[in-house]
Structures are given as C-alpha cells and as structure tokens.
Image (cartoon, rainbow, N blue to C red):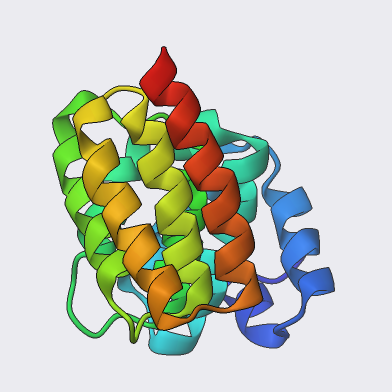
Length: 178
C-alpha cells in the first residue's frame, strides 16, 4: 500500500477494501497503533471505517488489539458515537479477553445496549454474546440477562435477535448447571 492508512480508509468503503487493509496491517503493531489512533481521533467517516477494519483485526489477531481495550471501551461509552463504532466495538469484545479491571464497565455498557429498544439489532445481539461470555465468570448476572432477553422476545423481536436469544438461553442454562 503506497498511500497512507487514512487515505486508504477514505478511498473506498467496501468489504474488499476493508479486507485489503486488514491484510496490509497484518501483525504489525505500529500499523495497529495507527489504526487505533484513527479510530479514536479522526473524523466521523474515517472513525466508522476504522471501526470495521479494527473489528476484523481483533477477530484475526486479538493479541494486537487487546492492549487498547480500555481506550476502545472508553470510546464506546461516549455520547453520540456512530452506530458503526458501537456495532464493531461490541463485535470486537466477542473476541477479546476482557481484563478484570474493566469487566464491570463492559457489563454496564452491554446491558445498556441490550436493554435499549432503539439500539440496532446487531449491537444488541453482540452485547448478548459478550454478556454470555462474562456470565461464565459472573453467574449472578444470568437472571438479569434472561429477564431482558425474555421481555424483548415478548415484545416482538427480529429473526436475528430470536436466533441469538435461543442460543444464548441454552448456553446460560448450561452455565447454571456447572
């Protein structure tokens, strides 16, 4: 890639371009740091696209993104962030080991997203998965998680939410039996 990372991100918004940038970043810590800086500090369009790229990097090389998790969580807690930042941020959390020091913040964030009927289905579903992972460590959150899922299903939910909810409820039952 001859142009800068920011220029590559601005050039085109497509899955092909995203995957090309992810491949270029590879396991280079300096490139990941540059991506994080764009994700945290740039203009709206760049931040949204950087979030998508970052979620793919986290999925493939979570050890490279792990050190930035507190900054990612802080970014997701800010008001009026682009939905792409929330969606890809919570998607990343599915792949990362959440340090004990920020597990409470992550739980609060994900419970808020899951409970918010105005939140996108993807953000709510990813939040459900993150909370299920945390339920292995904190089984005391299971009743609240089940209650929120059940009330959402009673009010009517999308096919995607219903599918994720069924898998989640089965996993929560398994956790409770451990």
